[in-house]
Length: 148
View 1 (spheres, helix red, strand yellow):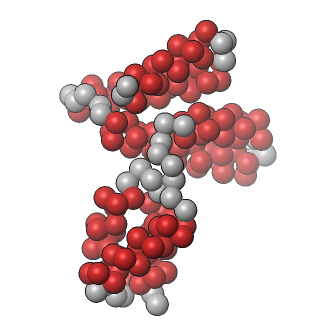
View 2: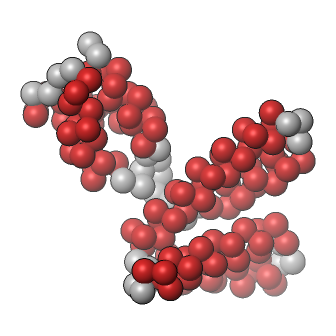
């Protein structure tokens, strides 16, 4: 079963269970997928859907920070619930130790050093961690490693 079929099935289940929050989040997700398909005239495969989900999660995390800064815990909780709903469809996230191991491996195998090598290293790391790690975390660990 494709990821899109799974999301559609879960949306139907949420509809039957009268779970308004989950239903709303899944409808938003399917809408984003459909928009991407129409805009780029493609059929979204699992990789594209995971990219969309990662983008939506990042937006929600930014919103949570803003809501908490504005003392709007109710809205922050709603965004956090949406994040939990979306995370189900992503592969398990890598720990910092696992990311650090990949970063060390790439840096030593390519013989990279210094801050100027960040772009080249990120290009080599990205395919290995795509969808499994927040690229901001990867970038921070890489910059720390190259600064040594």
